[in-house]
Image 1 (tube, protein in one colour):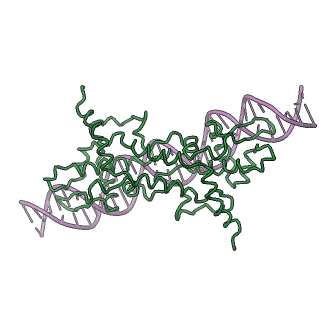
Image 2 (tube, chains in turn red, blue, purple, orange):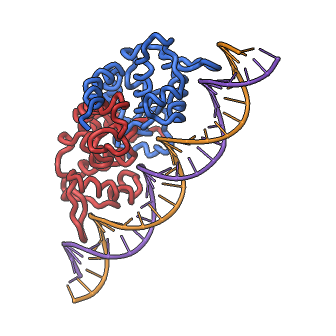
Length: 150
Length: 150
DNA sequence: TCTAATCAGGACCGATCGGGTCCGATTAGG
DNA sequence: CCTAATCGGACCCGATCGGTCCTGATTAGA
């Protein structure tokens, strides 16, 4: 189904949320606060933030009064960055890059490594879309659902 | 990891193989013959061909002396077609299309449905690449690996 | 008519992964 | 110095998926 993990979806939500602080409150937020703000389960938020921190997309401050802080503005974070941070390098099949395990049927694999064509195309697509794009595209929609009739 | 299933990979190999018959022998091939030609396990080949047949990419002939036959030329089969045939509709997240299950946090999901942006971009990429492209790109490589030094 | 070969569909197991929980390490404040 | 709050890493369980096998339906040839 060519799907990204739900974690990646959450990561986008979390990052957008991180960028949406009033900017007065030090732009540092804890996992629980983000969880309550996004309605994403707290452990999941923690896991996502951990990965994002490891990938260098957010800064973490340990200890009491610690939390997470966004490093780069949303405009400079591509979807590819988020996917790479959560799901690892973007590779459609196990046949690419170093993952040569089991692909020892070299002569017969007629399309050996030629998923690269597809990989590159998709990579380009993902690089060209930033989180700011996703946020802006979602804004009119969220505005409509934030003030529902019910 | 944004990956397509291995079955899809096999499907590409199988389809390329189906198109690579000498054209004299009726272009109909059985599952076992394709399996031996591609070194893909026979049951897996059968499964792939079944799915491709259901998707209308190949024609099946039942009974003795039956087999599979390619309908359209490789040039008219996009990677998106194959992925859709094996893995189902192309949708990066469960949040798109009808899959609204569990996504009832409407107001908070700041990027609700905005993966569509990414989905469309990737769909376009996949539609623009045909199996012929993948075959042609693989040819020089397979030529080099078919005559290895070892 | 009968047999053999082949496709179609479903059932079944093992592996991998998404998702969640727990405990230890670290640090600001009293 | 001690406590509390928070991040970091390890562990676990359920679900999904890749891969295999088996049985029944269909058809060409003897």
